[in-house]
Amino acid sequence: MKKPLFLNGPSTTTRLLLLAVASILLMTLDHREGVLEPLHRAASSVVYPLQQAVDLPLEAVDALAGWFTSRQQLLEENRRLRERQLEQRAQLQRLETLQTEVERLRGLLGSSQELETEVTITEIMRVDLDPHTHLVEIEHGSHQGVFTGQPVLDASGVTGQVDQVGPLSATVRLISDPSHAIPVEVDRNGLRSIAIGNGSLRRLELAHVPKNADIREGDLLTTSGLGGTFPRGYPVARVTSVATEPSQPFAEVLARPTAELNRSRKLMLVSTERLREPPEGERRGAEGSGAAAPAPGPAEPPRGEGEGGAP
Picture 1: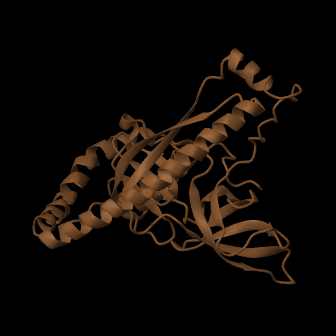
Picture 2: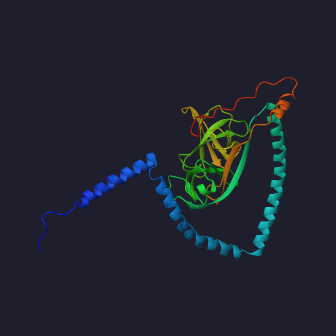
Picture 3: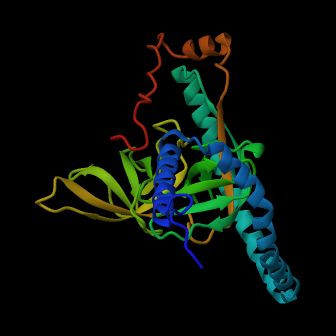
């Protein structure tokens, strides 16, 4: 059998090189320009039913486990929940009193804007297994009003924020991710800083804290509201250690996240919207309540400090 003198088409090596160059080009364009974003959304819509089907066995096992829970365990759990509910009701009464006092002080200072918060409950579908990124996938997407950058909480504190959004699901980047940073303040005295993830679910680092800063072990860190992403006042972490070295310009401050990053399955998506300014009559009444006309209210802090900026 005679072999042809010329082969039809390029060689296998040439085809492989062309495919590699095309792949690199497509990945670069997608990373820089997002040219494949419609394809990602379409693939997310197609894969979503398969993800739900994969989760069905786990849900069935959970249901069977619940059916076989003993009556005594249910009674004990019910008793603990009732006690916890009573404790939280007492705390809520105190918080309502404090909220009334804060609103009264805001009126006296001539505050012109307030924040209203809405929360949507969602559930984790999948956890990214890459050890260098801390990402989870939730079962809500753009069809349910989820948007990129949206704050995410659990029952104990800030969990992270939405990183990517598909039609029926979204990806959340946890605050422990090395690329995540969140503006925080010490609840005790208002000292501001930036909490940075370092790849550990149990530890955050505070950036550029002066050695003489008034911060100590046990201090609660809450969202400062700077940057416009996270509303102010949500718990983020609690300081676990403060160390200073003569050779270092700043103190080394470590904190433990209050959220249960490796345990929570139910999460809350937070949405905030500005309310209208208070009526002119109320504003004048607040200004007239003092002995002398007060000076104009203090300006809002600059919004230019993003999540990765200096405090």
